[in-house]
Image (cartoon, rainbow, N blue to C red; front, side):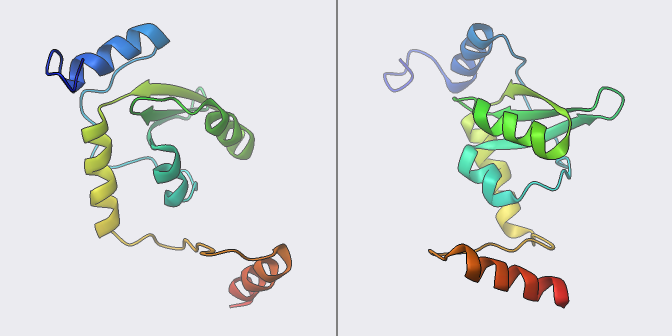
Length: 130
């Protein structure tokens, strides 16, 4: 329906939010929550951390189109907190990803290419040693 021009992205996002019973963020915050999850995972799963409630130990993650529930569960286990999904537009998510590419990812390292676990351990250990 969107490709045919009958509805815009905001209306589709609103309909999905009703269907999945989750809130819609009309605008993403300028500053994302620093939660220790690598940026490469945000882009892979098309999600962004938008709010953390310390009192409730709940991290709110914004998605566009599909909600990646396995990723939310993994984040809950790693961070020992609850996660809640919310929706935003794909255009909004893309704009934040573009902005993130302009900013340095301090302290993040990525293993690009295929490596075996022994090599990854050796490389990670070298970073720890300095």
